[in-house]
Image (cartoon, rainbow, N blue to C red):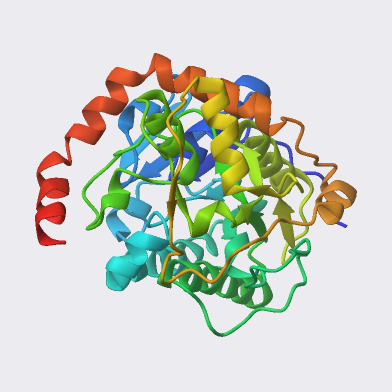
Amino acid sequence: MTDKTTLKDAKILVVGGAGFVGSNLCHHILDKHDPKEIWIIDNLLSSEISNVPEDSKVNFILGSIADDRVLSKLPKDIEVVFHLACYHGNQSSIADPIADHDNNTITSLKLFDHLKECKNLKKIVYAAAGCAVAEKTFEEATATSEDAPVSLFHDSPYSISKLVGEMYGNYYWTRYQLPFVKARFQNVYGPREILGAGRWRGTHHTVWRNVIPTFIWKSLQGEALPLDNGGNASRDFIFVKDMAKGLVACAQKGEPGEAYNLASGAETSIGDLANLINAQTGNITPVDLKPARDWDRSGKRFGATAKSKEKLGFTASVSIQNGLSETVDWTMKNEDLIFRTMKNHNLMMKQLSRDS
């Protein structure tokens, strides 16, 4: 077992640190772990600069880790890395598989190859995707464990690229002893996930990102919440503050080469989620029942939590009711910001509507 990695007085790199999860992680580390420096690399493809903490310990580099000029700006003595950058979401990757490859696959390979020369590196934590290993079922779901078998057939380029990232990391661990740890994300939600953040990515999912911020926004506007497949699908929703703690636990206690689910362990149907959100916002508009998405076979899933609890000492503590309440409050307080980022894509959204 490796010694515990400390973040106190450490030089830390957060790739994707202006994004939803990355920015929450940076705030958490600054508040709780007293690092020496945090270096953030972000190309702002699906994020907003306003998410970056205004702190003297934070250094921001605008650009992609696929660019050698960007990587050359990093200190040689980085100690802990969180690789959270990605081309956001399944639907965007289906619309543009090449962009997904350029932003999810090449980026990971370039980063790992660069980091193998960093002699002070103690841990690199990679944001892996629970959806890439979960069983495809609309029957009763069982908790997806870290050693679940991986299919060679996937619903999206995003799912494929996240698995390829794991494989590249495993290779650099076995070949170069890169201290690579896989944090398998379930469905993260919470403050700082900004609808419309970043640049146009070819589909309406540039604006309507994940289900919870979309539902909260539409519910606050008194709109009907759209339930694909009648809301029968289910997910494991984990609050972003819990996710930040889980990522830190992976850095502190995770064993190189191992995978750890960062999950709540609770299964919530999309129909129940809609009802919870409407109850919190007071929205009385009936839900809009829709057919299943033609590309999505994932159906029902949630993550097993035993390994992370035993090996990392990590347990998600925020209930979905409390997490949703905090997220609704944040959305209401940041309404002007969200309106602005969504408005940036009005022209392209109208063009999509005309073309469909």
